[in-house]
Amino acid sequence: MKIQVVRCDIQVYPPGMQKIWATSLLLSIFLSFLPLSCAPRKKARPLTEFSQHKVVPVLGSKIHYLETGPKDAPTVLLLHGGRFTKETWARIGTPMVLAEAGFRVLALDLPGFGASEVFRGERGEFLEGFMDALDLSKTALVSPSMSGSFSLPFVAKHPEKLWAFVPIAPVAVPGFREKLAEGGTLEPSPVPALVVWGEKDRLFPASGAAALGNLFQKSEVNILAGASHPCYLDRPKEFHASLLRFLKSLRG
Image 1: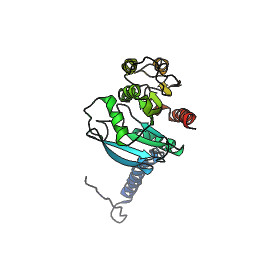
Image 2: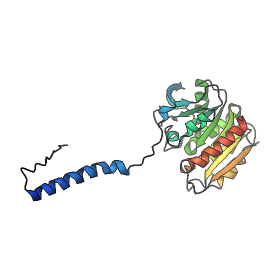
Image 3: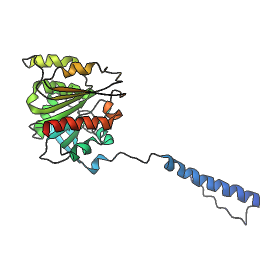
Image 4: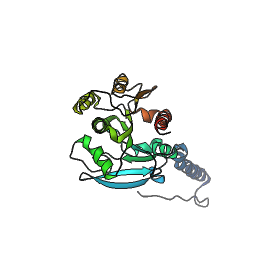
């Protein structure tokens, strides 16, 4: 880009031209600052300010994740939906909210998303491999949308590895009952669950929330008013309040 610098010299230009150049210069200066003055002042706090970025090999794939909070605290593992990554949680401040409440927080890029490599195995095996790689004996699992294809098979197979489960309008709900049956029982899962759904979810209607909740022995259902499919993004304040209350009731 070529930048032309125009100088106003009253000894060169006649009085009429002086006014034109002066007006043009002032207008240019004003317009150059206009985008800055109109830009939103509030920005999401970068996740790197309060997290450590790490990489761990999981069953042959390099998986990227972020960690924050006390290492000896109860762990909360944040998954993500199909259009998002671990950084999505930063935009609404979830890792910071949980860490300040005394939880250890892990937010990962699922295989093939964000910075993580593709994983060739079964999705239900991936979370088991991730927990083993980090030597996690137990975690709470927050699982929106697409990540249900990872979390629900894991919940059905390894309830002993979870102290809480928070599905957020997850996919693969129709196959969850069958996965429970494969485990040798049709009894509801013993994992305490908070089922979160958006009232205006057009992808998966909120009527599915109660049906999912019935697949757990101890469950709560929270429908976020007016929210769409990524309801936690539409109503972060309400989502955080519900999530913290639920987790603290189990680890308070």
